[in-house]
Length: 495
Ligand code: NAD
Image (cartoon, rainbow, N blue to C red; front, side, top):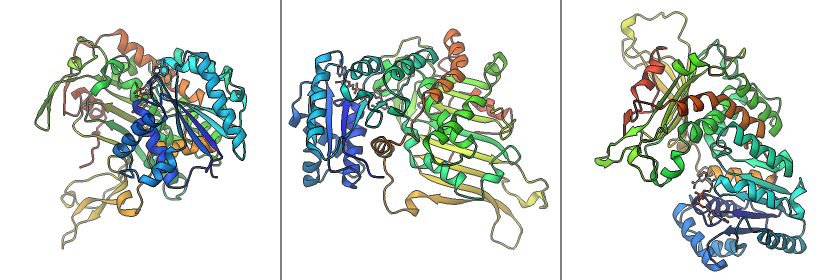
């Protein structure tokens, strides 16, 4: 399906997200002919720009951040002729009337009534006021045409997520609400569905009988950078686990859907969250680890500890690292641990899913024949490398029967000539087409919050006496290693 005529209203059009991600994504979609010839982008922000100064800024952003490199002069001229700027205060009702007349103008001029996408790339405290004001636009209740895209974070806890869902659903139908989680737009994450459900090979062994444990590890080498003020009120659980990691976990663990319909896939995903074991006192003690980075050396340069970062409270109790062990109480996954970890200022930036299969039932080779025995593993690397590897044991060439592990590798770079689209390209195109498969449904978000609330509450109410407990450029606190080592495993890293 190609998108229909579309108007993009970007609230926060002058912000960082619009500059680095949204406009470069729309420009690349335009270059690759995915946009309908009738489209318009309206940037909304507080800054005092006119159309041309706004466009000039966006061009600088595209030149710097687009995967297609520096913008082509003619193509940019054609693309940017659809961009206008409207100085807006989200609290001012009059500004929404101006948006209304922009919409009406395009409706009158174009071949058919356009889809209208209100993209909320603003701080979350503005989501309610914008949504309430949008309700007054004539087009708001048009379920087929009007959509609202909500950036992360969706709520600060279960209660606020529920409140936001209630407010949104009092104005829009669920099929108009696109809660974005950009992880779901990533190629390798989407490939999880293809790998599992387009191959006869994996699904029969995708269960507790063959899989020993699963790991999802999302580590960043950077610290909080200039987001200290925001991050200190959030932390790793909210910033990464509640959304990205749990969404990825759902794709790994979901039951086979009947078809590829958005609702079907989202139903199967929410089933996983509903089956996840709640954290009681014992699970909190044994299955969760939190950490906060101290100063350290990164590539020969001294970097500040978390508490010394700008905007961060000097005795902050906020975690910059979280590791936990989950269980999914259903037939497929009974007793299979799912270990997840995420952290900032970790030695290596990488996002990996590692699925470790059970050992062979009986080893026929003499023990000296194996140099380093490794059970079969399937490793999906989301970033920076985009690859899927199957680790198997093989015979090393030579006259003796010596075994060692080798990787069968499907690497995107070596397999496909074209660049993969950025996650935001996929997601923006889906929003234009009206496809919600890769967006989070309201109940999914609430169930994910519900699951982590006991951990959040416990961590917030009990100050960690050991913070900071890992140094910058390490692999996180030692207790995170102990969490997995006590079960006889270790965290997997790519070489
Ligand atoms: P930003 O601070 O760079 O931009 C904020 C935007 O809001 C600006 O365009 C500003 O003009 C506008 N704004 C502020 N007050 C306003 C008002 N009263 N009326 C009208 N406009 C107003 O923020 P950002 O980094 O672009 O983030 C925006 C949203 O996207 C946030 O919810 C953030 O969590 C989310 N997000 C950002 C990134 C990122 O990489 N920047 C990534 C994921 C999610």
